[in-house]
Image (cartoon, rainbow, N blue to C red; front, side, top):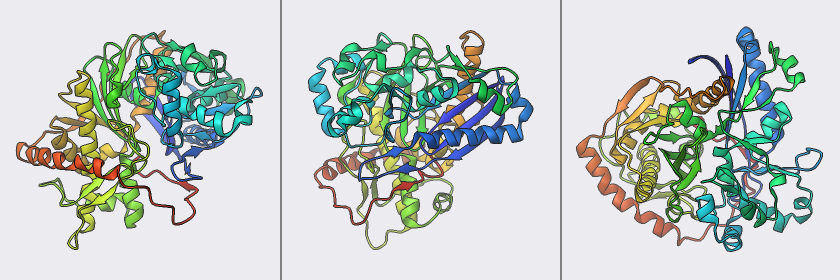
Length: 499
C-alpha cells in the first residue's frame, strides 16, 4: 500500500493505492492570496493544515489501508519560493508559480548569468523561482539576509513530514538553478541570485527513497511502521507518471488551473526562445518538454465567477459537442502567458462581442481560447523538433467532453480521457512511492482509456482558419496598457472546481 499526496494550487489531494487499485481519495481546498495586482501567495501553514485534513479523512474512512502504507510520494505545484530561517521558521508567504511581480528581475538574471538558457534550458520568466529571490533581495533585503533554506512547496511539506531537506530533479528543474542536462545544482546560477548550494535541498531521483516519516506522525495516523518518503515529482511530472508517460514520444494535455502540453524526451532538448520548458523527468535518465499556459481551467473559473453561473451549468448550456467556432474571441492571458510569449504583463479577455452575443457563445469562446493557446504551445514544441501524434488528457478540465472535443479539433490529434485523470498527480506520486519501496523499479502502467476524441476534418479545418485569426489577438492586447484597479484587490480566492 502506498500514499500519494499532491500539493496543488487549489487543493491538497491524498490518494491510497494498493498496487494499481485506488482505495481512497481525500481532498482539502486551498485559497490564493493576491495582496497586490499580479501577486499570488499562499501560507505554507495552510498546506500543512490541508494535508492533515486529508490524512485525517483517510484514517476515518480507510483506517486499515492507511495503516498498511509502506511509502509516501509527494507531488506539488512548482516554482514557489518558500523561505526558511535557520530555525526552520517560514519568513514570508510563499510566492507562487503564477505570481508576476519579478518581471524586471528576469532581465537582471539573464544579464547576471549569460549561460542561463543553455544550463537551465529555459529563459528567465517571473513564474520561476530564481527571479522571485532577486525580487526579495531587492525589496525585502533584511528578510533576504535571514534566508537559511529555499524550498519548493512539496520540499517544505517533505520537511514537515520527515525532517529532511530533500527534493528531486523534475521540481528542481523549474527553479532556474539546476544544471538540467547534468541533473545537479549549478553554483553559477545560484551565485547570480546571491545564494549557495548549502541553502538548497539535497537532490534525489523521483523514484528514490528520501527520508522516513517522523515518529509523531506515525503515531498520529496509526501507521504500522514508519513509511519511507520517495523523491516524488513536480505536479506535471507526477501527472506524467500517473498516465504512464515515461517513455520518449509519450504526450499529454493537462487542463488544471494552469495548462500544460507535455512530451517525454530521451535527452535534454531546450528551445528557450519559444518559451518551451525543458526539464528533467521524475525518473532517471529521462527529460521532457512542456508548453505552459498560465490560465487554463482558471479561465473557466474566472468566467464562472464573473457570469454568476456555476461551471457545470455553463458547460451544460453548450450542448453535446461543438459544431462551429464561436462568434466571439477569448484570450486566456489572465495572469500573463508563458509559452510562447513569455509575457507577464499581457492581459486577456473577450473581443468581438456584439448585441447578439450570449453566455453560451462566451463560454465556448473561453474553451476555444484556451485550446488556441495550447495550439501555440504545440507549434512551439514542433519548432524544437517534437511531433505530437496523440495525447492523453488529465486534470479537472479533462472531465468535460465538450472541451476535449474542442481541443482534439483545434490541435488536430486524437485525445483520450483516462480513468482517474482528475487525480493524476496524486496517482503518480503514489506510484513513485511504490517504486521507491521496491528499490526504484519502474512501475508506470497506462490507466484505462474511457473515451477518445478524434478530429472531425470539416470542423478541424474551420478551427485552423479561426486559429490563424485568433493569433492576432496577442499583438493587439500587448499594446493595451493595464487598467488601474477599481477596488481593493481580492485578498483570497478559490481557483475553480475544474482546477
